Image 1 (cartoon, rainbow, N blue to C red):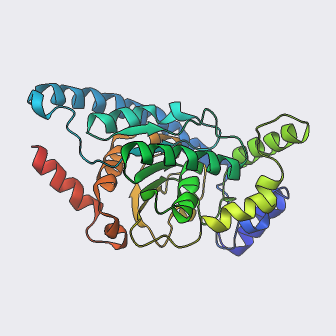
Image 2 (cartoon, rainbow, N blue to C red):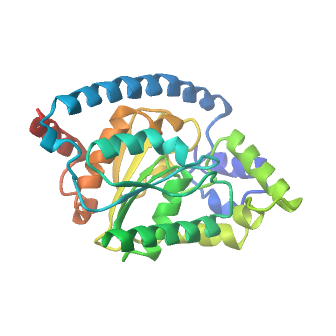
Length: 296
């Protein structure tokens, strides 16, 4: 999966800007998408975990129910072709754990990435003003890439980000099914359908600006956790491991990251880490162990 694989991938997808698939990364194999079938099991685990967590919450003293963990609001941003509904389950669990969660107001993440980033920036700014606090962002796939770029642009608004399966190092290292969806959106946009990704968004100025912005260094007081899975059947997991982030490996499908209980636990711990922890104060596993012992 080195240079030859990347070059081959670019030949197979001439509509994609070559800079979005640097050497050293490759698109998942066609059969890798079969791994995504585990989302059914991950959803089942989430349902069981959610029920168990609800029971524990009801057994807890009334005064401690819904206690706010942090004053910082949390905005959840969905992935490509998904909307806020895709992260509703995670949002509900985080609220139950004491976080103030907000939706991104994205009904379907299929538009121009720069326009989506601008709209998300306005949404975050309004929340920051309302709560008089900087904001944390949890982004799935493309949502994490938007979060990464915004954290560079507005560190005054954003205190930390958590990305889940977001191929920031190589946005073009995605499965052929995703490529087909992108191509369809571009064709529809070319035909005059408004609000969809245009050619500029996948190979032109828009794509390059979004990519370059998401690679710039973050301010030292912005926490950054990158969650990735080697079982990811949609994107090359290596592209999700930003060298400036605190990387955490999980064992889920790409889609299942929005549901799997362990991923929710990782996100919970990441949202409680101080910004300075981005450079590695202690592992997320130790944070989870401490949280577990304190709740016991």
